Image (cartoon, rainbow, N blue to C red; front, side, top):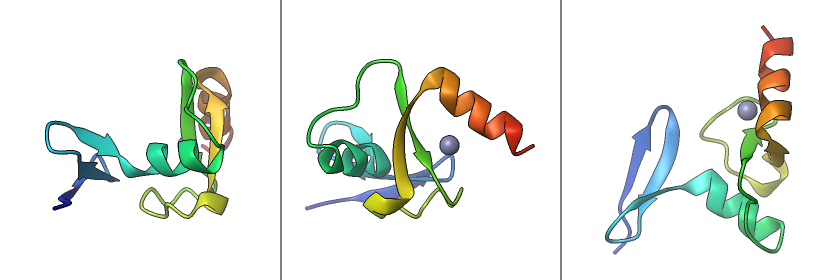
Length: 72
Ligand SMILES: [Zn+2]
């Protein structure tokens, strides 16, 4: 049975022995694979709980920081 919680504003689900970020799993599946090391998942509309595949983008850590710094 799936369990869900919110952590740091992000949705997580339990696999039974660990908590996974839902948006990372959704983005990985949408891209047909896995998220490379050093890459993060950005919520395009900045709504952390909006995990529709169209709202998610896999970006490098550096790019991700730039995106958020620009919006400040
Ligand atoms: Zn982001």
